[in-house]
Length: 625
Image 1 (tube, one colour):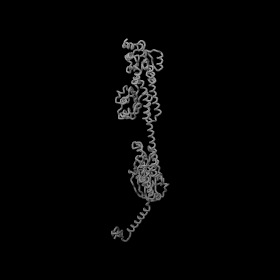
Image 2: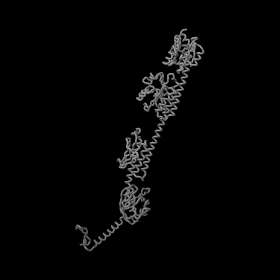
Image 3: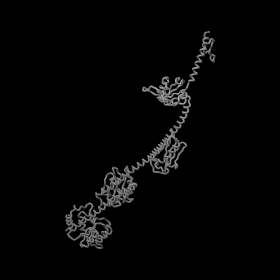
Image 4: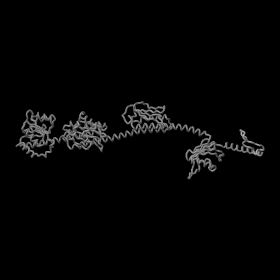
């Protein structure tokens, strides 16, 4: 029977659909046989089947050279060959760790050969002798069976490695979560490739502006990866990364060399395929993960495992961000508490009426260092006028923050804070924005406190002078509040304050007057002197000053009273005792009256003449002449 007919007959016997072999990835067979004719026939029959790609060798030596150059799914070897036979060939392969499925295909059908072959690790033993359709049919089925069995074992081994990598990554993230993020990502990459489930792995994290933030890798040399990292740092991300960043889920790059032709990593991909997947959690895209696997291990089942790994990484980054935000808020809260303690301490100093300006300034300076971000290396100084207050460790350095103390609109001093050593740069050199607000608030409060102290000092001096004047003035003084009825008509007034002269002039004691109504302190005043009461009411309600003389009947004294209102409803009465003046005036009037009676009624001629000689008046006797 011809080879073509034989092949067709075998195809009918074996079928094609039942074998479940991917024609795009045919089974790679190495046939080793010293009989060239048989070798060619076997090759032709297998390849016409459409499931196989056959390479041939005529000796063990040739076969070993082929194996060094190529990778095969199965080896089909004759038993009896020159120099080395099939069993020696099998033993050498297994001794060197080569576990490629091995089928002994020979015309020597001795049972002991088959047993030895199986003991050495052969997967199948087939006899060449027999009906060709049967022989080659069994060979084809045998090849497919051992290859798929081997692939199944390899797949299970592969999944075990990938699952172990997934577990290792998860445990690593849980155990080493306090490491810096770049060290963690580097550790993840190493664990992805450590089990050899993934041949290469690299992870890229991006910032909020989608620019490269962190890039770590494993299974790739620095030289191979640096060029890719440099391009990403310049904003030129490879095709696989764009696919991942723009589309959720795992994506298989079947042909990295053509899809990512501009990426240097594609040139070392060999027979490996790339999977790339977005790192995202709750809508936050953190970057992407790319792994390389042998082409033989590319299955649809791969995606869930990779999704699990990317999910663990993404969740970790998410929780790390939450922890960092929480830590930042906790730290910031601690800084604000320090600042509030400083301001509270200054407020307590300022509120204490029994301490001096110097004590306020010194106490404030002592409160500054603990309120700054790095209190252990902070010193401070406050200067006001010619006074200076320093911390014990004070030293001028380049790392300075200051704020002027303003009193009555003019610079009166300065608050200065220094770091004794260099610290990380922030908003204002090494200083925080909040520390700028704090030092300005301290300077402003000191300015107000010193203004207040100065004002209090001036007020005390003024009050001292006023008190002395108030106490020693000769005029009586009464500060009173007018009392109105429902129609806003004055009906009484209360004495709020009086001076010593009031007591001397009126003869009334302070204890019997202060806080009392005039109707209680001096009964009958309103009834006996309605004009006085009306005058007080007018001044208190209109604010217009008045002054007048009045004979105070109850006390039998004459008073000259000046009345003014400091604010509506109140009045101040300043008065002096003019009783003596009134007596003298009255006596003078009586004397003048007597003189004029004598002048008018004298019998003699009388004239009044000015010093200048001018006649001012004449009496009746002179008029009658």
